[in-house]
Length: 334
Image (cartoon, rainbow, N blue to C red):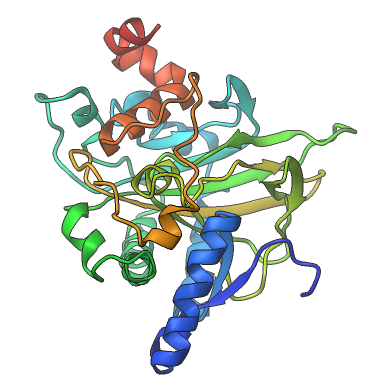
């Protein structure tokens, strides 16, 4: 694995004594200061659960088109449900993938700030009732992994272990079950375009043996092939904001596989409540000296309030949903 472009960290080291735990925290800080991405092993996520979710994903995408379109996201003002191939955009360009988006199961909210429009029920396929149960188990398991990581980050950044627990509120999570179909084009095609995640933390499960993920390092795109038994972990814009740029959100993209191959991936996004603002962490002097400030991009402002960051991302990625359900917001931001 010497040729891997990302560091590999072992979460089980947190349970192997204080010396191993301290070494893990140092490696965690270095990985997300230098790269913003790493592989994570030792999570305790069972291969059996991974296999069940993978099978459920394949079963969903194998459903008749009518069953998938019955829960198409254009029917959801909360950006939930199925997105057909070509139905999402990154940097204004069409992404060649299909997916189902699943968030916290809530009643819709019809008042308050604009980002409250993201709160609401999911759309589940009637033809595949078992999907809901396996997704719920995946959500609970990965939420536990995310919380362990956040406590380790808090400590290695000089804060109390409970720092993120105190400032997160009820987490805003999002699970995307994604299929990248193969293309016959001779040149590499955009599965999903270059972007940074809008929140704090992403845990990505990738179908074993399937490449395509690329991470930007020093101005060049490098491959991040899947590692058996590992998740790919990256931080988002809100983490960069909270550390004054000491930790960096990193551009990444997915290149479509060559037909007849295809690729399943399942990112899990773990973020604060929509109405929560992560305060700036008071870094130790030696870390603060290495903080280069938050990335300035007029085309992509980073908001301190997570709901504003999340809404920005969803309106941009799904212009059809935005036009149908949120025309007033589209006009206001035009």
